[in-house]
Length: 367
Image (cartoon, rainbow, N blue to C red; front, top):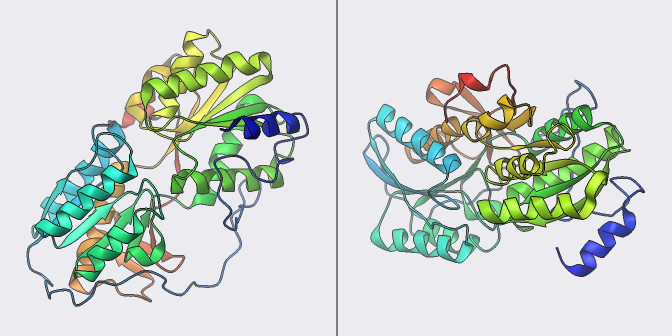
């Protein structure tokens, strides 16, 4: 956050979470907050397909294909889990050879280089999770122009730069789950801060925008203090959370972690500060990383989906696109053991609703 942005955030503190025109880290796209409580969103009209298409792709229907998965970065639990799902699907399908490769830091320039190298070396399909939706678009369009099938998951690009995007959960569903959990744990008028990766990371920007819209509608007394960037770095996430704790003192009643790195790091910062039970941590993370904090009652709610299923679904979607079994205008696609997956928002395939891990269920999961 810039000094000016921080000053602005402080100036509106105490006037409610939605006094600012936009929480830092949120995007400017339209929002669609769900109904309060257990309500659901009103039905919306179908959206026309808005994805891109490969140019003169080879007819590989039913044939063995080689695909590469280039996530935001490699070496963290979350993308280890999506990679496992990709391998599980490839083995199950029997005609897909898949590998995961990418940068060790969440840097868009490095991610672009990896994708470009695989375009040159030759693959039939590319899976990706974007570090930046706009910056990644040209190299993905280059892949499409070479007849390579392109499917995103976890973090989208601009729609015309890929065929399909597998959405782990609708953004407004994540926003609702996060805000409801915070209000339940810290109180309707609690003040909170957000630890995200970067302000341009597409999925986190969408979640934050939807969180703000839902808070304005259903929990208007919640007070947003500040959003800070921590990349996908554990040490920086811990330090940023610690800075927020020290900066706001007793005013801080909750921390949102927007990444699988930021959430356990924020929980560790709260633990080290001796504030478990006084500062609520709500965030997105893998269950294994959060089990110690859930079991010692420092964290009550972990919001996520199954990233193994996400990688699995993305592989099935890419295979279906290659085989001509998923075409623009289709309403659903077969997702192997996941069953039928619905197409939403024109060119997105929905994995399902978010899942909340708690002390009662978190030991049932191992990823």
